[in-house]
Length: 229
Image (tube, rainbow, N blue to C red; front, top):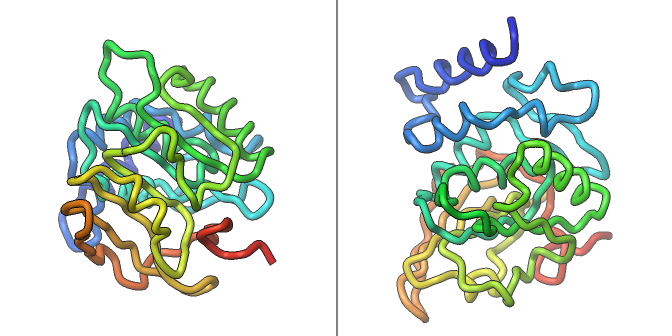
């Protein structure tokens, strides 16, 4: 079975009715169909791009399973024209998926800013994003993502693909009023909860638990996350 056929089979599985359905939003399905996941896979594993699990990249970093990329994209309630910050670039696939949804067709400037703390992984992501032809729509930075990107704030959406004990306060302050932040919260080496923060006004936020103790992410390391030791 070729990769496109594998992709279609996975899409139909994710759309199947029932409690395990993860794919609901048309814009996410369209982006998932358009994006070639094999471009973001570790060398030698391209043919396994549509297997339903995560793969190790290097230095503790992973590319999540396809269903998790879909869950995160749908949790953000993405719309065309939004400005998005992602913390934890990894392979670059999640940022690419988001960029295909939020970037207006007529624009070639970044709508997605993604931060990776590991130089080797950041460069891997840049190469993958370029192969996908999305280098003008996504800006990859290598720095401490736990403190966000204040020079580009505020953001309509913030996605953190690493877990922490609590949401970094810097990220909340960089969220627009009405904006949303999605990230896993919980203990390291334990299942975590996927939560969504909506900024109601300058002082008030609303917190929702989207998935309770059912996701597993690497640690958010940095000044407002876990220490590296």
